[in-house]
Image 1 (cartoon, rainbow, N blue to C red):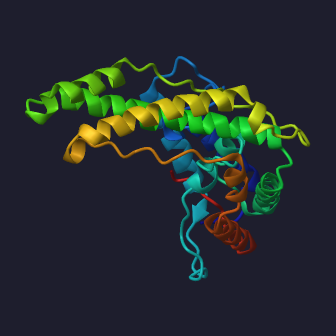
Image 2 (cartoon, rainbow, N blue to C red):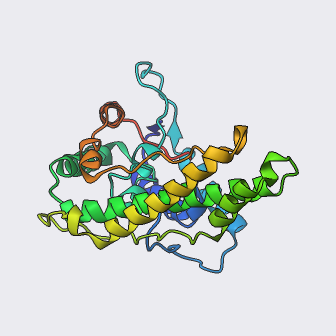
Length: 272
């Protein structure tokens, strides 16, 4: 989208208003951390959605589709930054907004600088804390919770194999297994603080809890049949792997696209 002539200050104001309205609806961005709605704490969810709709509509009234940018794809998922665990949670949340053409280059530089720093492990201690947080959230939400649900629904079935004593015993162990720890998200990076994975208590706890769940998962799959087998576990991403994967080809492609949008005078319009 391209800004209509005039009214730049109003456009910037509306972009800020839309970003605030979006941040007030946590279910839309799924980023863990110590974040709270920016205003109107007693506002209902429907009212917040309506406020976002009004802000987006008002902002859209100041934009128009381009007629000379056929070489640019029309959109890119904002989750390229918003869901990338390489970025700090606050940076991810701040990506959910509309960016005016003149603001894009500086924002791109900040994103690129961070990715480069991650690859060089310049914020190692922070990166490790963030990795443990992200992996623990995945372990809790996508392994433990789904494994519990799989065991619960299977044990409720009447099929003969689902009522065998051995599978019921494993199912009962799964249902009795405590929820793994969700380690807190670090808030602010400290440059030069090195990571020490071998001495990190949170990482040790995560690795122990993930190994326990993986053992239960394997015991279940040896006995379960068909769709009752659970295959969600994807393995732990090590600290080195996390640093090496920071600058993915898709992320670089997004940076290139956003830069060309800025050069063409385009707005990155949040329509999530």
